[in-house]
Every structure is written in structure tokens, then in C-alpha cells.
Length: 314
Image (cartoon, rainbow, N blue to C red; front, side, top):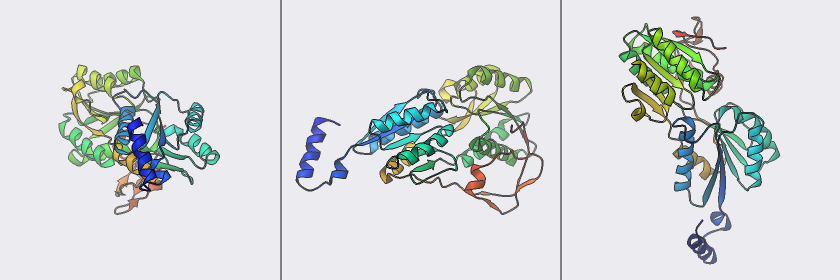
């Protein structure tokens, strides 16, 4: 906060125009599992942080990068709390258990976690429903693919990723009922060598459109371009990095949501879009009968593929 701004706030307080709470500076901590400059998921979260700083008066932010989804994140959270941060955005899926534990220890701190079904009095989750976007991206992939064979490179077997794969596949099948999606799991949010190998393996199998949900899309996009196939991006628009391969993508804009949460100073529960049946699982069994709507708990605990996806959920 600048000296001029401090003087202005002091004058307003003296005039009785602002209460002490309005003048008090709010410190907010952000924690990323990878580098903020990954041109993917962590970049999207950091853009949200910058948006909050630019839009919400009296806010300062601190960001920690490359924090693993282990007990290490608890130490980083403690460090932020001891530095006076009242709100913490824990932006990676594997941070939730530690946030719940620290929420009990620090009831006056608000923890906002990216995704997940667990909450408490001061630990909330936030997420954005990209299902519709992934469905539309699947329609694009299904329309462009000459073979009807699509590929998807994912990091971990978690509900958000199952949702994206399933929405993508259903979108592709809406324009090409015979379209199939083959899935490869890398076991890490950022694993360039495995990502390269997966794209090359897909191309060798006749798969001509590859989608992804890992932290950084750069490796997948550039490898797809070298192999002469297409790709669907996620998190951040990087079409300029692989213009010949890029078809479209689903990008996050976390800023307005984060701004709202900060202004409310409380954990905001994620409100999902409604997913309606009929939906068939990979083995043909029903996941949702025709007309039935999947509730939040069913969506956030999704652990299956829809019919038409090739690959193991384990």
C-alpha cells in the first residue's frame, strides 16, 4: 500500500467515512503445485491472483510455487498464516486434506480449495464447470477427425479429470457416434517425457486429435504439431505455440470467481451445472437413467468412464 493511499485512508477514518474493517489490509496466500509460468493450469490460477489484486481494494497477495501435494503444503500454509494471511487459495486437488486439518487449528482463517467434496466451517471449495466447454471441444474433435480415433492425456484418476474425458467423448459422439477416446495417464501433473511418448504413441495408432489435462499443454501441443495431428488445449490459450495443431481449447478465467469469494470472505461452495442422463458407463451399465440429473456428490465422486472411452480407470 502506498504512503499516499495510507494518508487518504487515515483522513477518511478521521472523517468517520470508513470503519476500521474497511481500512484494514487483507492478506491472501496462493499455493501452486507447479510454476506460475507453466502456460497452463498454474498460470490460470496466477492470472486469477493478479485479477484479485487489481480489482479488490486493500488486498495484497503472496504466492508459493512448486509445492507438492504432501505434508509440505501444510508447512507452507502455516508460514502464510504466521505472516498474517487471512485467506488461502489452495489451488491443487491434493491439498484438501491438509486444508481441512489446518482449518480446525486456525478457525479464523478461510481456506478456499480447488475442487473436492470435503468442506468444514472455514474450508470451502471452488471450481468451474468445464463440462460444457469440453463437450463442445469434443464436437470439434469429432468433426475434424478423419479416423474417429481420439486421444486424451491425463495426470491423475480424479473426478474432475473423469468428467472432462467423459464430456469430451460424449461431445465427439454427438457428431460421430462411432468416435472413441483412448486415455493415457501420466501419473504426474507435469511429465514432459511421458507426454511426448503418449502423443507419439497416439499418432502411431492412427489417433489424429489429442486432448489433454495436465498442468502445461506446451509439450503436447508442440509434439502434436511435429506429428501432423491436432490437439485440444486446456487452462490457457496457447494457439500461438502450435498454430498448425491447435483446434480449440477450454480456458479458465478464475479472477471474477476469486474476487467474489474474497469479497464475501467465506468459503464458497461450488455450484455445478446439472448433468442429465441417459449416461452409460464404459461397460454399458447405466450411470444415470434418461432424465435423471447427477447431483454434486455424484459428479465430484465420479470414478468411471462413459461408453466409448478406451482405457483403465486405475
